[in-house]
Length: 290
Image (cartoon, rainbow, N blue to C red; front, side):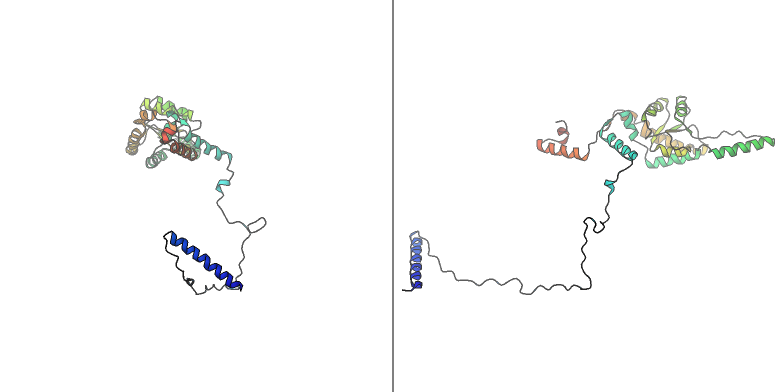
């Protein structure tokens, strides 16, 4: 007996036993599955490679040490800024984070740009004379005196500056309009001036930049500049400025006295509060008290 005959008999016996089990369980016998041919591939077309020009050889860059030059990047955050720049930036951040008393917080509310432009346009008409102009005026007066001509002692309307001088004018109610800088350092020098102007009935405004205020009086900086009188043709401009100062500063003085400044949170602190509020199921305001 050959080996293939023995294997064939055993296979038929196993198939018979499997069919009997299926019949006994009430299941239909397994049908002989015909072999299906393998599905055809999606595309029989060969992918065509693009022809590269052999004249241009690929030269990948190596950005390792001693290799190719790095591409230009924005390195602003890596700059070591001067000490005065770091200090003034830190000061701004502290003013935003810490609670600022109302007396100091009022200096954050400055005159709007359009009204400030009108103010400086008026102030520049009443700039005090420079050293050269004063020298020329005195020489002309001396020459007129030697020639026996009548001297003209005409009083000029000019802007007044200097903190002590302006405070004296306000206390005497001689000042018609006062402009205070918002960035005086230390701020205690002018912190009392808005209250004094309001008590004496003198219109005042708070403007940005003591340096810009200083250009009016030929100085590097000026904490405060005042007008005592103006020419008749400028009365209308002064009246407009006085009404704007009254609406934006004098009338809002009591309201500003009750509002504290600062208290603004940074990005990191805000995100932490959001996560805490989400975890506890409360609002951000309630989460900040936890």
